[in-house]
Length: 567
Image (tube, rainbow, N blue to C red; front, side):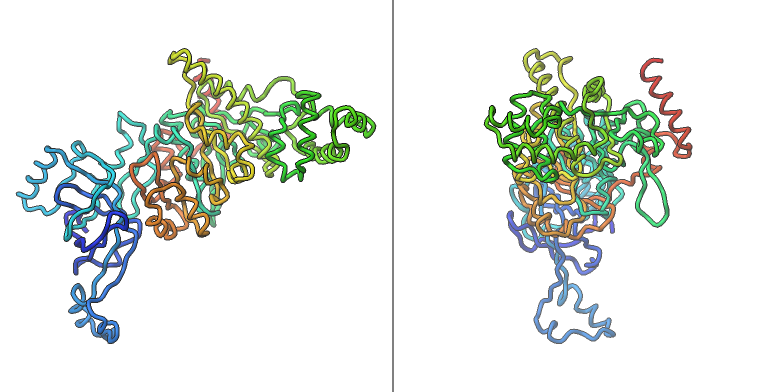
């Protein structure tokens, strides 16, 4: 169907409820799909709209009471368009108000016999919708010019645009503005099996390629840094970020043996000492360790007495020493003994040491300061206790360093003191950001601060309803694959104007390679067929041929890293 062919006429509507369009007789109702984009041409402005519902109507209830026989196609054709018809519901998202140059182009197009004005992407002012088109305004398929006017193009020299996919019925790139994307915390949501990891890998590749920020990725299941498997009947793998960008990505591992088994030969070990664990870290994992409020209160007493070595001192204390300590410091013997007993579970975490020869977290920070992107792999240490404890410890120290740098930059105003914007990626985000623990985690602090200290979050989760409402309202851009649970769907639209009209769109997404994108990084909500993360994508971002063996990949990565370091 050509974009200059009108699809239907506006017959009623309101600014709050959207528009109702009656389809012309020659338009097939089955071509109208929820999530499709249409343009309604008003007298002054063009309205870019999303299709949110499709309805069948009849001019008389007699047709419903006595429908034509299925074999009587002649009568069906006679009724089509007059007695029976289709209507679609449109939600206007943006107004195109052409400038004088565009108006001249429109007049010129009309004199040439065209009914639909041609969009001039260089002379279009995008405005929020504050009115609606008049009765009988015509609706059209959105053209490639319309999409480019709204979403731009990937090679725009003035913006860091990155193509995340295409509309569901056109082959036109849909771009997000990465500069706006990294300004705020963002989320990738969807139920299990909908491709959240591929979407996240796609976004991280765009940030790295366009140099929009540096990334710190807490890779719970070891699927972002190095080669990972894809779902499907046949076994296949996709490249990790280290293989795509060997000179820009470093891998740190909390489980060196697991990383070596997977063939990652240039990862750096990462260990954490007991003296780096704060009481606030234990508050986050109190559920996993089954810690009572009394145990945590006594942990504070121990910390105040022994300083950063309080855990090592506690684990070495005998019952008599605990009794003596409680008598002097007004502690509870039973609570401290319970705390001592439950903290023995920390011995199972391979990355924890009594003491470390040096501060491994500082190595991560130095890599980020040098503009490197860091992937922290957990290997076999991917249980929730291990993941939550390590991410909170590492992120808290890196955030503290960024606060110090941001304050120094605000004082000096020297561009060389400006920190690299940092995006921290966490999985199972509802574990860190639920209402009960959000005040106790560094991630809740980062989400509320937004870009104040140049640190934002990229949260990946299948249960957005588990995330605190205040935090969800601060999520700038939400990229959402299929969700079925009503509470999860409702959580996606927390703080979103007009979210009710989009609920049906989200519920009708395909289970694979479709997502609803809305928020700060896009001018308007859009349903996309997500960009495939495959050999074609590798070639588009300038990567080498995917025919190399794993040994070839390691060798080439090492050579590239040496070249970047000037060797």
